Image: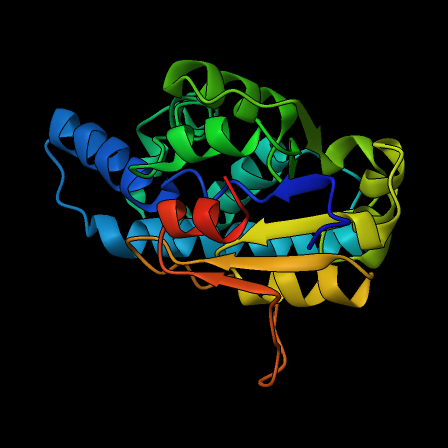
Length: 234
């Protein structure tokens, strides 16, 4: 790992706990409207529907859009199963959720430590605005934030990883992808990056488009953020 200079972090489900952020937000709205809702099922369905839209965008079957627009389209697709969506402002729901993501315990401190040795940037399919706002509120400090919306390719397309690495002036062998998702890391590895898998408190199975082979091997496997820092020498 001596040649690794840049760490590229996935954030949705790795640094930020989207599941419990979504659950808390939709539960609050349901309570305000006097409606019952299965908040866990809603969160998983929303994430899954967004990835269906994401895959269609990535494959060119839908026009290019940001993840905020994907999340909004996903809500439209869910309206038949969740009548509450007819009673609330869906665009406001997207922003109040995905622009206010809560970090996992230990993540902000780990990123601070890692920045003392590496250049640490975000590489995410989430919108630039959502991660800027979520990071600001959570006091997570980065050396840079790259949203795939600016790259012209969405992960897990190999071009997304290669273009991101190139923008930092690095070779793939000088970069490491850090994520809690095997599929994301498998794609990064195929693009020539080193990989670090970090376990988070609640497993987040990536949806359509991020399937990983059964025998994927990572350069670093850490059971928490503190372990990640130790294995990366900080």
